Image 1: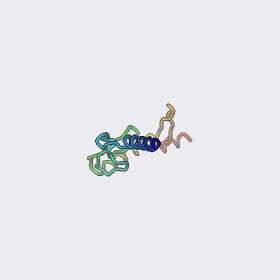
Image 2 (image 1 turned 45 degrees about the horizontal axis):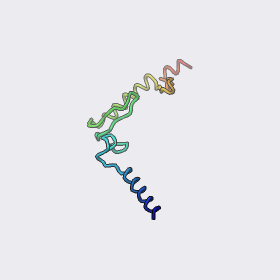
Image 3 (image 1 turned 90 degrees about the vertical axis):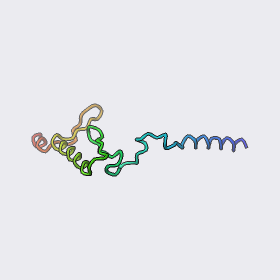
Image 4 (image 1 turned 45 degrees about the vertical axis):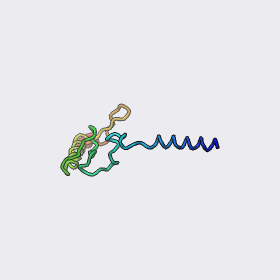
Length: 100
């Protein structure tokens, strides 16, 4: 009998910890997972400078932002910072020709 009582008490304690009220969640936690619909709350693009918020913008805003990012990477190359060192991932074509 004691074993059953201990198991039930543990079960109820665990179930109370797991269920959180939706009102307890922050606005960021309430957002649906990626990918999100355009113009929906939380919609945006991850850029090298951080996240660009595109919610409530015109439908082509995402494409325009990606075009800016890609043009910059094509012009300047793509670099990644790893362990405090800047590593070149891609080079502009002209710079690559000069280095060879």
